[in-house]
Image (tube, rainbow, N blue to C red):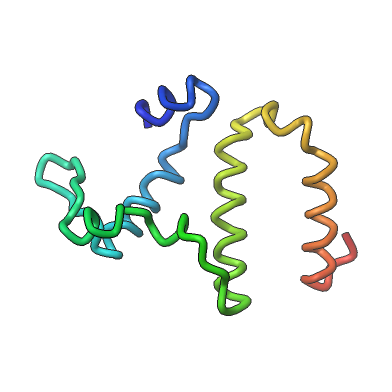
Length: 111
């Protein structure tokens, strides 16, 4: 998490709630393994594939469930980006409101 914050020049620090599910997903995909010292390393498969986890592969969802899983992943990213005060998303509040309304209509809601 420190390295990611450093690479983004302090603009974004991922929360454990986004990093650990991603690591688990990569482990399940067989591209990393967890060592006894609790660090991770690429497997041979991971080296061959470039170690991009399935969440970041440009694959169109094949079902509504897959699309909703992708939306959930993006929401987790935005939550981490916003932080406790949401200041980093203030400029995009109109877009967030529009998306909320569209999703509400899909779910049968009135908002």
